[in-house]
Image 1 (cartoon, rainbow, N blue to C red):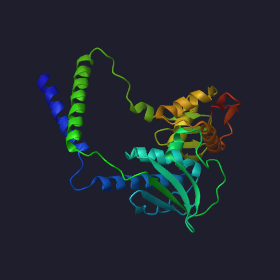
Image 2: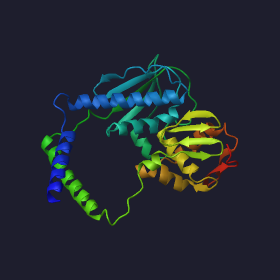
Image 3: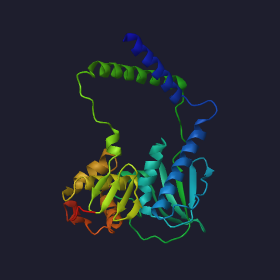
Image 4: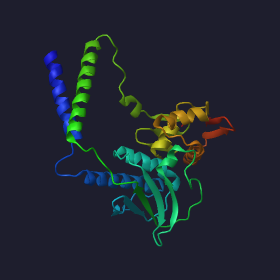
Length: 294
């Protein structure tokens, strides 16, 4: 057993060191720029898809200076979706730097909408919920300073070996107790679930919704909120509980976002006459399902 554990620690530590140390052919700035490019293209894709456009090409990401990136959106989109969607895309690609967001008119460069990443932790995002004029827009993201990645490979290697040692110890303890402890349910069970309510079918893993035959794509936050409602049909959910389960666990508390996202879900579900989201003033919301038959 001791040789097996030692071998596992050695292999894992080597793997972690290779993951944490930057590749010799690509600088930190190039990798950072690539991650921003991917995050912005993902954001543009979901904005256009949510607006009903699943075929138009996405413009290349522009990099006018060391801290600024932009992407051109020729078609109308929902600005209210940008804060959560962009935050999710940046997080997915490992970008943690502070940033500001601006939506500029393509023709004259006039600032139309915008906010700071710090607004995600406040109670409201500027300009969310306001009327928007249709037209070509440039989505601009500006970072506070050029990204500074880890400066030394030695620290990365040391960190990798430390994590590897902990991983080996945990593996060893789990291996010893596996005969005593029951095997937990697969973590993929939650992702593979299909939730049916009324005449609506909800696929959390695919972030998609079929409301009485009408298919809709969902954002990450819409999926999370709808799953909370769908797993508690005909139950009154208090605002504080919704905030805690949908936003607070990720360090983001935006009180007004509850109303904004509930409004979005109502629009997506309106094709199903057996389902509605009612509000109880000052208390919370309830997903009302009047007919479970499809």
